[in-house]
Image (cartoon, rainbow, N blue to C red; front, side, top):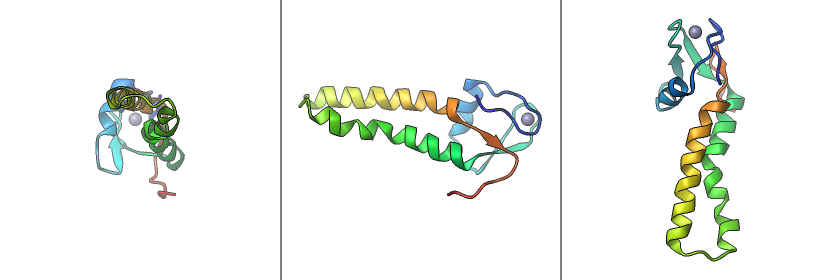
Length: 99
Ligand SMILES: [Zn+2]
Protein backbone atom coordinates (compact mmCIF):
# COMPACT_ATOMS: atom_id res chain seq x y z
CA UNK A 1 0.00 0.00 0.00
CA UNK A 2 1.19 3.56 -0.60
CA UNK A 3 2.94 5.39 2.22
CA UNK A 4 2.88 9.18 2.56
CA UNK A 5 6.44 10.44 2.02
CA UNK A 6 5.78 13.38 4.34
CA UNK A 7 4.37 11.73 7.49
CA UNK A 8 5.01 8.04 6.62
CA UNK A 9 1.34 7.21 7.21
CA UNK A 10 0.37 4.05 5.38
CA UNK A 11 -2.77 4.66 3.33
CA UNK A 12 -5.54 2.10 3.49
CA UNK A 13 -6.85 0.38 0.37
CA UNK A 14 -10.14 2.31 0.69
CA UNK A 15 -8.35 5.68 0.98
CA UNK A 16 -6.14 4.92 -2.02
CA UNK A 17 -9.07 3.61 -4.05
CA UNK A 18 -11.11 6.77 -3.39
CA UNK A 19 -8.15 8.99 -4.26
CA UNK A 20 -7.55 7.14 -7.54
CA UNK A 21 -10.59 8.84 -9.04
CA UNK A 22 -9.28 12.39 -9.09
CA UNK A 23 -8.08 14.29 -12.12
CA UNK A 24 -5.75 16.47 -10.06
CA UNK A 25 -2.03 15.71 -10.22
CA UNK A 26 -1.65 15.93 -6.44
CA UNK A 27 -3.59 13.91 -3.91
CA UNK A 28 -4.00 15.01 -0.31
CA UNK A 29 -2.77 12.71 2.46
CA UNK A 30 -5.69 11.98 4.83
CA UNK A 31 -3.30 12.07 7.82
CA UNK A 32 -1.14 15.19 7.34
CA UNK A 33 -3.06 16.97 4.54
CA UNK A 34 0.24 17.29 2.60
CA UNK A 35 -0.03 16.92 -1.17
CA UNK A 36 1.38 13.68 -2.51
CA UNK A 37 2.05 12.67 -6.10
CA UNK A 38 2.00 9.23 -7.68
CA UNK A 39 5.52 8.33 -8.86
CA UNK A 40 6.16 7.93 -12.58
CA UNK A 41 7.01 4.25 -12.13
CA UNK A 42 3.80 3.56 -10.19
CA UNK A 43 1.74 5.54 -12.73
CA UNK A 44 3.16 3.48 -15.60
CA UNK A 45 2.66 0.23 -13.71
CA UNK A 46 -0.94 1.02 -12.76
CA UNK A 47 -1.74 2.05 -16.36
CA UNK A 48 -0.49 -1.33 -17.54
CA UNK A 49 -2.58 -3.13 -14.93
CA UNK A 50 -5.63 -1.08 -15.94
CA UNK A 51 -5.15 -2.07 -19.59
CA UNK A 52 -4.32 -5.70 -18.85
CA UNK A 53 -7.90 -6.95 -19.51
CA UNK A 54 -7.44 -5.77 -23.12
CA UNK A 55 -4.31 -7.92 -23.46
CA UNK A 56 -6.38 -11.00 -22.65
CA UNK A 57 -8.60 -10.48 -25.73
CA UNK A 58 -6.21 -12.20 -28.16
CA UNK A 59 -5.59 -15.39 -26.12
CA UNK A 60 -9.29 -15.43 -25.22
CA UNK A 61 -10.25 -15.36 -28.94
CA UNK A 62 -8.27 -18.56 -29.52
CA UNK A 63 -10.96 -20.47 -27.62
CA UNK A 64 -13.70 -18.88 -29.73
CA UNK A 65 -16.07 -18.18 -26.81
CA UNK A 66 -19.45 -16.59 -27.31
CA UNK A 67 -19.65 -12.81 -27.03
CA UNK A 68 -21.45 -13.00 -23.67
CA UNK A 69 -18.67 -15.19 -22.17
CA UNK A 70 -16.04 -12.88 -23.65
CA UNK A 71 -17.79 -9.83 -22.17
CA UNK A 72 -18.23 -11.48 -18.77
CA UNK A 73 -14.54 -12.44 -18.60
CA UNK A 74 -13.47 -8.94 -19.73
CA UNK A 75 -15.70 -7.23 -17.17
CA UNK A 76 -14.44 -9.54 -14.39
CA UNK A 77 -10.81 -8.95 -15.36
CA UNK A 78 -11.44 -5.20 -15.48
CA UNK A 79 -12.99 -5.25 -11.97
CA UNK A 80 -10.04 -7.30 -10.65
CA UNK A 81 -7.58 -4.88 -12.30
CA UNK A 82 -9.31 -1.84 -10.72
CA UNK A 83 -9.34 -3.54 -7.30
CA UNK A 84 -5.61 -4.36 -7.31
CA UNK A 85 -4.39 -1.02 -8.72
CA UNK A 86 -4.25 0.66 -5.22
CA UNK A 87 -1.73 -1.99 -4.13
CA UNK A 88 0.77 -0.67 -6.69
CA UNK A 89 0.54 3.02 -5.82
CA UNK A 90 3.77 4.66 -4.66
CA UNK A 91 3.83 8.25 -3.48
CA UNK A 92 6.31 11.08 -3.77
CA UNK A 93 6.53 14.57 -2.25
CA UNK A 94 7.36 16.06 -5.65
CA UNK A 95 5.57 15.82 -8.95
CA UNK A 96 7.55 13.63 -11.33
CA UNK A 97 7.56 13.92 -15.13
CA UNK A 98 5.01 11.78 -16.98
CA UNK A 99 7.66 9.59 -18.65
ZN1 LIG B 1 0.89 12.31 5.21
